[in-house]
Image 1 (cartoon, rainbow over the protein chains, first blue to last red):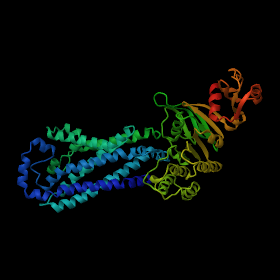
Image 2 (image 1 turned 90 degrees about the vertical axis):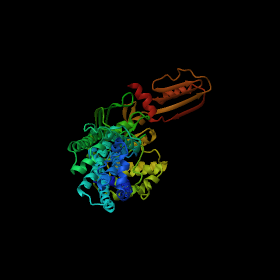
Image 3 (image 1 turned 90 degrees about the horizontal axis):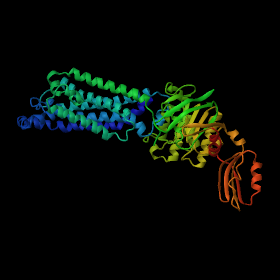
Image 4 (image 1 turned 60 degrees about the vertical axis):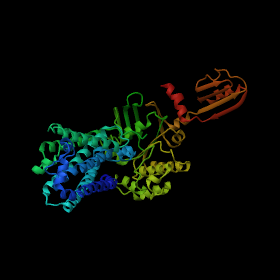
Length: 267
Length: 293
């Protein structure tokens, strides 16, 4: 418990910052919505002139774009990108910072097992992610209700938003596994930006192509298709299961590798 | 009872580094010195013992248990690493309280006692502390839970002489209260001063384990002779001489044995200068024990 509280305190500032950034993005994009809804026809005509590949890449779906859910799901991909970076950053750093900041010699000679350390840090990170997510979600509801021109389906809105949490968790878990597999991480941000944006671009390319169901497995950003969610008020089970599988596998790898890892002296 | 037991402990890092077949027992209540040049394997041995590094083969236990299988044995362990680093953003007192929270007992009184003894300001931020002050935080952190085993890895670097003395007093007090102390260093005078027994490690192997008292009783001298005339290269080729260097009219060596034998030799020379001093432990180890292996 002491480690959990300590970790939570350490994460407090960055979590607040990420939450503010995510909400800021939502405010920024959604504030365009009223204007766009007003000129909906012109807007659709404009977007129709884009090549279909580009539209697919940006996640623009002409039949939904002018509804608040359609618009939201388009701009939501940027928020998800941001959330993914947060998750990855957190995952990469939460264990590796003890080595990077050279505090491993303090923590790892305390009378606690390595798995207990992983557990404490895992739960503290999950708390940070959940806090970010729920505060963002609450803010998103307020903003969406503020700018809507028509009523929208709250369940679909919830389901779309929940994909943020899924993506945060996937990248967090993968980040944690990567951090224990790498010998020593000197810096975290370039790596997390690289990995996340890499997957994002892969996802965008997959979207612009044939969008083959098998190819979609390559990027977590393609596991949750908002057009599908809007149409069915549900997720696609195979991708949801894959996402869960990735998280569970990455967490297991983390526990196993971290317990066996040698913690070398400073310098 | 052996508080520390190393049995055939080996750790390979590929080529040459690491430790090889290290066997060592430290008994309860001892102050045990662990000497060797930098890179000899002192830290590797200690880190394996603490459960930071997994041994390639062999075993390392404290209180009869491996830190990997029984991490809870470390509740009786106080460790001071050679380089101290702590959570920069915390205040000293918060760090110490965090440290204490792992031991499930109230350490507040002890924290203040130790901080007073070491003259450490508890309200400052870690980030603002000088190297010496960080070291003090490390010392308080290592002792605040009254550990039964204290492991120190090159503990005195960065402390001024006064503080070093204070520090050794603290360690002696803990030892009197019953704590076993395991203490690595390459500064030999401090080991000589503190320890009951010493082990010398070189290139990953223990060369010798010896009582400090025995070492002293053996009457080693470092002798330097400067004569008026050119010296015969073989003049000091007698039993008990080690590390002999003869150059022109100067000779220098370590001697163990009946001092009269050397004095008789020296008496036959026309001297400009003569010095007889105490060799340090490293010299003794290097020039006697290693050769005898």
